[in-house]
Image (cartoon, rainbow, N blue to C red):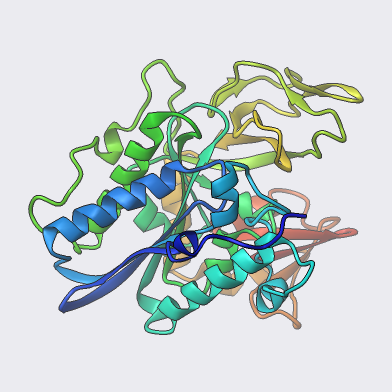
Length: 382
């Protein structure tokens, strides 16, 4: 375990930028570098910070740019002792930062949490958070959100494909932690880790967010890079507007011998039964037809790949209409569905009774976190 010491200059760069305009407005909180092998987001925020400084500030609101895992960034490794983007459960977050033999990331998390809470203390309902990342595979940039109408609306304004449902499969991410604590939280994957254009794309996303919030940097400060709608890669797979996660392949390299087969890209179509990877037990096949997302081409990581499928725009519109009309008030009348008294935003679904499209109906209403307990499925909405 690495000794938890850092140069003072590195520690002072946790917050790259904290600028407040004279006119009131929303707060845009940007966080990059939760993984040490993803420096593109940090470079993007450094450019944005420099642009704001040259321009003399913002027209309104507040811009805060933070760096996540400083120790891992120095090592250019995903993490030192543990994944900083898998430890944001409420209980662990509250106790992070122990001294002695604690993982380096415990201290990193404690310091980052303190910096985040200092921003939320002012006005959590006015905070829009961007969590900036890159992937080990090539492909177009995309966004990840918890499925709320506010998140959908803001992510749509960024002009990127929107992936729903990841929170059903992953626990303890920073994005998951921020949901419910801020007005809007969006994760952005800007491209491949070492691709120079990834920093350009992430910079363009942050600039677009500033414009969407009408905080626009004064004349001369905005990036000359491509707009979000132009951030496609020539010759790479193009992604539909909305997609949902259907499958996650959990891995434990190098112990299980997982190795992705070469050449797969984000959003590349794959067929049911297609062999995309291998491990100690042999070939690994895709369980259903769809598109591959975030295939693992690095030595560290718990996610071998995801399979996503497009969502028709019609269902996105229906979903928005049902939620605005609060159709969830009547969902307990469906066969096999009961309220769950211990949790106010949770329903218990008896899958023996509600067999047909029960989960799809709840997805339309925004219930995207599901946990199975025997024949009962617990679904929760943000």
